[in-house]
Image (cartoon, rainbow, N blue to C red; front, side, top):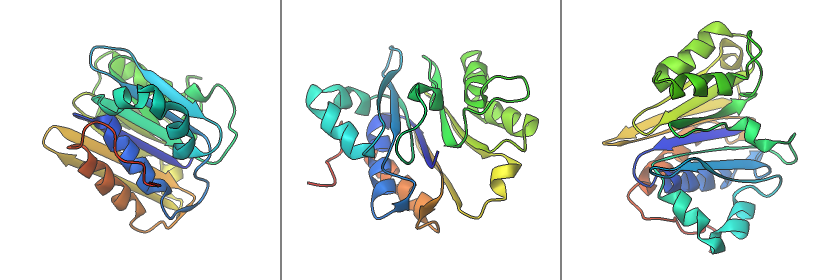
Length: 221
């Protein structure tokens, strides 16, 4: 998996869509293929849309007219994971979510840890039990440093990211974590060009979208 983005705060879903558009804009490599976009509306369970090819353009074409993306855009917790086309189903395995939060990431966040539980699922279970995102991702990094994965964990009030020692040795990765009052957004990516500064551009685009309501404009229009 190439790009993971997570966000919390008012219109977190809109921030994810704006950041995702920036991730695909002008970039080459393993991007614009499969995607899983998840939002957790206030007082509700996770809402998920996904595709195997076409990335954000496919999601917009398939769901914008239904009004579902407007609902997702206004959600206070949201995330996406996306990469090249045609990944192993079920695609939901790459971005697990519950009522309290979600876990996205890059590389192989669904890889089983030493206990046989997928890393992203294990982190989500910790958060569902009340463990803060920072501690949830740190436990996975400390326990399985040679697993090829990075995680972003998000709740309604906190966000954290971490790469394992294995991923930190890569030279094609990028990351960014930004905050403003009441909001936060995190980015992890690899295997796309440009690398230098791209995570920061993605994060800034997402941060700017928090004040917009509800659905950011289609960048193709």
